[in-house]
Image (cartoon, rainbow, N blue to C red; front, side, top):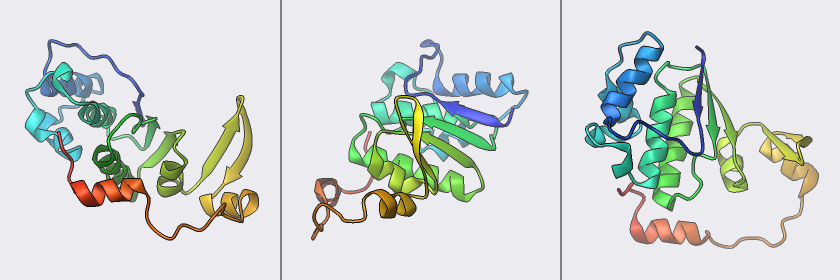
Length: 172
């Protein structure tokens, strides 16, 4: 009852709308939440009557997170929430995660994207072949294991260029 889970890939009843699915998931927790409120939390309110097959990759990920929030969890598990997303969709999900965490929700994130982990996480556990090989804050791990950068960056990266040229706004 206190956890929510967003999986990397999901399957939904394809004949139901997003609103129908969120009502169904809410009732599994004996709740009667307004689906539009949940969709608004993930910037999908205009898709309330859409079916999952009609969503883009970023929209599917955000809907998956909305589904994981139906029970107002204290702990939210996110499994590779931005894999395969364009920069706008990725940054939108980052902002959502930051907002949920700022409101007191504990987020457990699995990712191969070290930039994402450094940006979103206050504590990181690095695993290799199923074993924990390092644990700590991003800064502590960097200081201990990579104190000297390979070369100093003088500018932003290509993702920053892309966002500057195309805008930060989420596109569907």
